[in-house]
Image 1: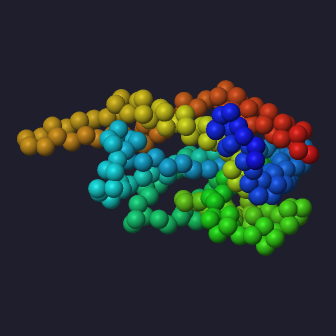
Image 2: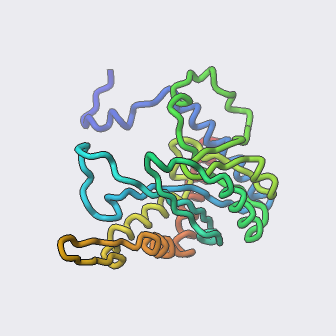
Image 3: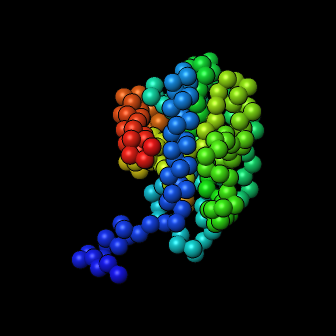
Length: 252
């Protein structure tokens, strides 16, 4: 049995039995994406992120003593030209509000068609535990490229037939490949802005007995989205492109 001078190296050397499967998924995705790009498709990354009540207010979570507070789901998309010219959506998500907006994805597809023409819409799929646990031989063969018919997110359902009706193609980002999408970095920038600037969007009302604090959440999130400028988007997409080139060059 190999011995390591540093026990942390054991985690670096460990390999999952599904590593080969994930690598083939990733290569299949990258080859499909590059073929679409060479065919004149503009790459657009669509996704959502959750903004918790504690992130907005700055208060510590209840640590299980109370039910979790509500969260808001922000839906937007971007690419090398910056955020797409489409109004982002903000949805309240709690136990009473879980329904998806069925008309949102057709509206989005029409907006990007008018702005960019045909697009390759990349969506980070929510990982399903049953798919991860399924034996490798039961899955679809890796060599066969197949576009997902539906990619369900919390607030929007992305359908291949809707995308193709507007001239687009729909691609699912491979699992555990967030470095192949610039959206996670854009969401991180938005959340750091919320943390650092929430006091500027806070109003306080002092009554006879109680005082109330109001946070202009829509303005706060809108300003945070504006802070991710087109130049920042170009830098993020350039970093993703370097990862793509590295992966294609090393494993093809």
